[in-house]
Image (cartoon, rainbow, N blue to C red):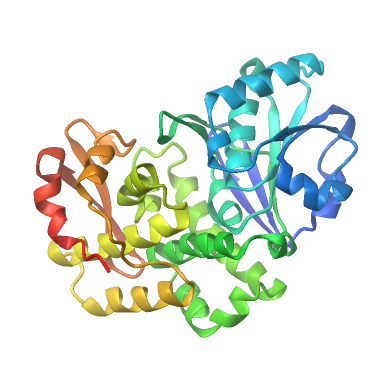
Length: 346
C-alpha cells in the first residue's frame, strides 16, 4: 500500500492506494457509520460491507441532484445520525460526490471517507475535497470544499467495472500525465495492454502517480483560487459536451483535451504538433474519441454558465509542453469566433 497525504485548510486526507476494501473496518467504527452506496456496487460487494446501516442510491449521473441529497438527510435523521456519526461513501465518482456533499452539510458537517470503486473516482473525483451535485444540467454547480478523512483506492475493485467506465477513467489518468508527469504518460504508452487488463501491480503504480499529480496541486491551492484550475485541462469544453450531448465524462474530456491542444497551437503557446499527434494516438489506444460529429455552437452557449466563467471571460487550460500547463482566458463575446474553426468533426 502507498499513502499520499493531502493537507487541507482544516484537516489531512489520507489516500490509501492499494489498500484492500476488505480492511475497511480498520478505519471506521461500524456502529457509528452510515454507508452511502449505489445499487450496482451493493450488488457486487455487499458481502464485504461492514455491519453498518446503508443508504442505497440509483446508479449514475441522474442521481447527482439536490433531491437525492434531501432524501439522504431524511434517512440520516430517521436513523438517528448525529454529529458523532461517520459517513462512508462506497462507489464511483457520483456516489463520492453525493456522499461528500451530504456529509459536509448535514448538521454543519460530519466526518466522512470513501471507498472508491471506479478508476475515474480513484484518480480524480474522490481526491481533493471537492464535493457537489448538478443543478438543471450544470455539473457540480452546487458544492463545497471539504476533505475526506481517507480514501481507499483498491485496484482490485476495478475488475467489475464495465469496459466503458475503465476507458473513462483512463482519460483522467492521461490528463494528469499531460499536465504534471511525463513518466506516467510513457508508462501508459509502453504498457497499454497491461493497463487495460487492469494488472494490480501496474494499476497501483498508475493510480498512485496520477493521484500524486493532483495532490501536489491541491496542497498548494485547496479551494481553486489559482493553480488548482490547471486540473481542468480539457474540462472547459468537456462540461459543455456533457450537458448538451450527454457524453460520458471520459469521452468529453478526451475530446476536450484535443481541442485544448489545438487552441494551444493556435495561440502559439504550444510550438510542436507532435504533442497533439502523440496525445491522439494514446487516446485512441485507450478507446477514447478525439473528435465527434457535433455542432459546437450550443456547447459554447452552455459553457457561458460554467463554473470556470469569471465575469465576461472563461478559463481555458492550455499546454506549452507536456508538464507545462497554463491558464488562458477567452472573452465570452469572442468564444465562437476564436474556437469554432479548431473543431474538426470525424
